[in-house]
Length: 121
Image (cartoon, rainbow, N blue to C red; front, side):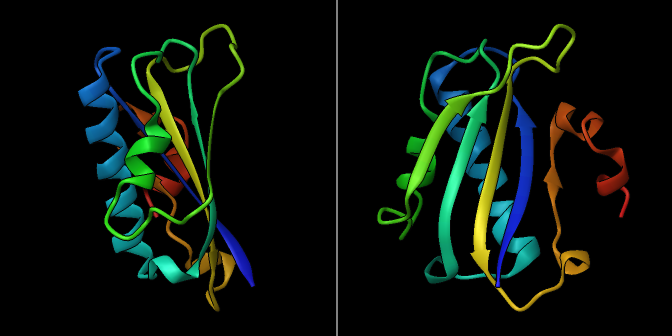
């Protein structure tokens, strides 16, 4: 079974180093909380809000230890008025035997506002 694991985080300014650090931190937390190996990863979709233009967060995923062969695609989220700014989102597709209820979706920093129902699980 392939399951999607969602995650989101924010940065404080449009800065390449912050993009890389925040993406890596989010990826590490997704891996830690869901206990999977890179060989179980089918692909990753990365999105950013349109105000992030300094770096590709997908590069941080591809350069993470052992993740260089994982298919990763980066794109922008819809530009919706009032949306959370400076937000990076990951959707990691993982082969797992876990049920939907066992998957831990990760929201860090200001992104906890996006899904408080999942953060408080």
